[in-house]
Amino acid sequence: MESMVRDIKLAPSGHDKIEWVKNFMPVLNHIDAEFSKTKPFAGKKMAVTMHLEAKTAYLGLVFMHAGAKLAITGSNPLSTQDDVAAALVEEGAEVFAWHGCTNDEYDMFINKALDTKPDIIIDDGGDLVAHLHGDRAELASSIMGGSEETTTGVIRLRALAESGKLKFPMIAANDAYCKYLFDNRYGTGQSTWDGIMRTTNLVIAGKNVVISGYGWCGKGAAMRAKGLGAKVIITEVDPIKAIEAVFDGFRVMPMQEAAKIGDIFLTLTGCKDVIRKEHFAVMKNGAVLANSGHFDVEINKIDLMAGSVSKRPVRKNIEEYKQKDGRKLYLLAEGRLVNLAAGDGHPAEIMDLSFGVQFFSALHILQNHQKMENKVYLMPNEINIKLAQIKLKSLNIDIDKLSEEQHNYLHQA
Image (cartoon, rainbow, N blue to C red; front, side):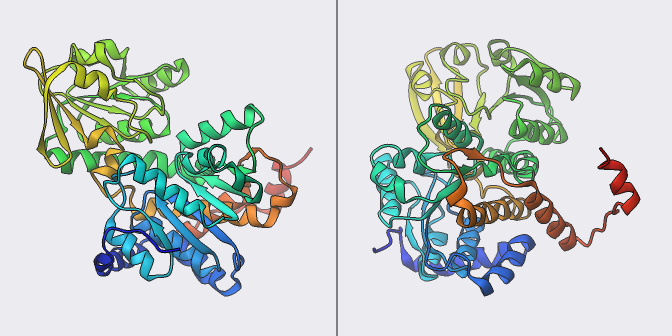
């Protein structure tokens, strides 16, 4: 099947980007060195839907070096980097993605990846799984299983599993310690503010920053905002997470109150309509709106447009919505993932751990799918420990070890 990318001539800069991130991904380098020799995925086809940029491309190459035949597409219309997609084609992958694709093109690309009849899938947000339980259900019986990268995708998976509709085993890679403790917290925290700051060129210090959602992504974003000198306000629906935010030193209030005083709003909930009509109505002139949740539904764009008399681009990745009373509200990256649509995503060193989780999740499916049920599984913790040990070694960090006596003490009946 012929790949579909924007321009194959862009490949040279894509190769450069991939080579750059390889320098900072020692876990994947270790995996590549080990499994390119044994090729455990030889003869197996993989379909991958992820934010298609350099770090993801390197994960794809590691799978290919381990024997897999790879079909890959983007998981967001604005996060694909066309030069990286072209470089992957030159490396022998089947690639179906380009930056700024329409919704119809996005669905077409996913279907093209599924047309390769994969044995194993890697999903980011749940769209591959949704197609395999919808219009491409005829392929589900041949899927060994797969893994899911995001909180949003895991929520969708668990809903399928709880209703008894999940058609193959899936590993919640997002819920592995070596993923969410680092990717969701430090990765989202840094890359989100990188996307906001490079897009707006505005100071963060002194501003009222409203962060909606205090899960691991929200914690990371709040931590970084505080470090940048912002006055951070948290909105939550979970009372336990709200108490955490209070004890972490942040103000907590309903969105209706926060909307009146916020300068920058950031959503990271995985839910929809977090910021909507009644909130837009009371926002300050010049308020900036951004989202780092997987789908562009957290900031209600229909409500935002309904209250506006005009909409226009004022800077790359910034749209101005002029309200009927003259106030101007600014939406970043069309309400899509601001860290990827307006930035380069998580740092390489962070994704190194996350993609180590993805590799071993796929390997676990390959080796164990025949005895797995159609459920959502956690990655075995011994793999978390192995990944952490590889990472520590790459950082030249040693840690203490238990003596036999200490081990026996901790494990005595």
